[in-house]
Image 1 (cartoon, rainbow, N blue to C red):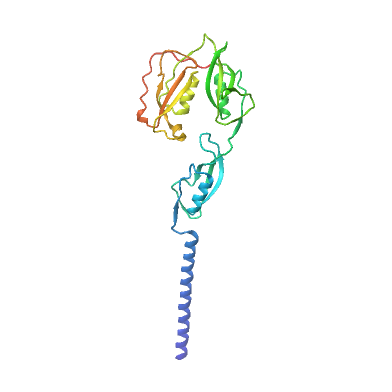
Image 2 (cartoon, helix red, strand yellow):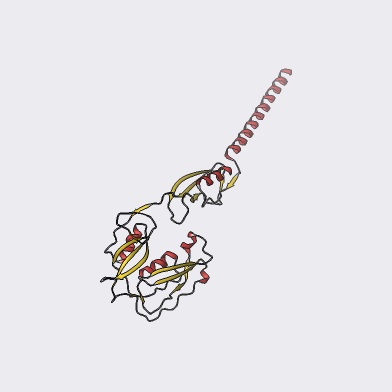
Length: 274
């Protein structure tokens, strides 16, 4: 009887000990797993846009995250070497130690080769500039037998030769011909158009954008891309205007300021670009 009692106590003690060890191991593993994976501990990703790489790295390091520069772009109107885009997006929830992938605005601007636009029509020259990542600037009209025939290409009031390296998104002014028998155009209706579309429409009608006025809803370059024209001067008219005349655009993000398009009248069509 004593032997049975001894064996029973021995088995019981060992079973209890094994259970205790198992509980300790499971609890320890759970605690270790939580510590390693930062279980239930999340960090809000900050908005790094506009920060320098050094600033972004320092900020993320101080908040349990890491910066990893993975790509670069070139935005002419944005400070060079600053954060342009990030992944995950600002406001996202991530675990401690997470890498934040960063795209920066390149320090050195992208260069493109200036094409030879001499002899092109205005329409052809504009298309060629856009295909190279360049923009049409001012139209400078001079007497010539062929209206809207490109005679010179300029940058900063200086003639720029074909093959010259030039920063992308640069504006190129064109000296174009104007025949006295074919020198009139019409003001297009550009109310409600976005920034670049409005500028393009003005150029398509052989006119110049003399001034662009943004209201207080437009705070930065990104806003300007989404802004729409709510006023133009001169207004659309059936009366012809000399080619190269200036147009002023007023833009806003407040769509309530944009008037409704007027009913079409029985007017003749506007002449196209040669």
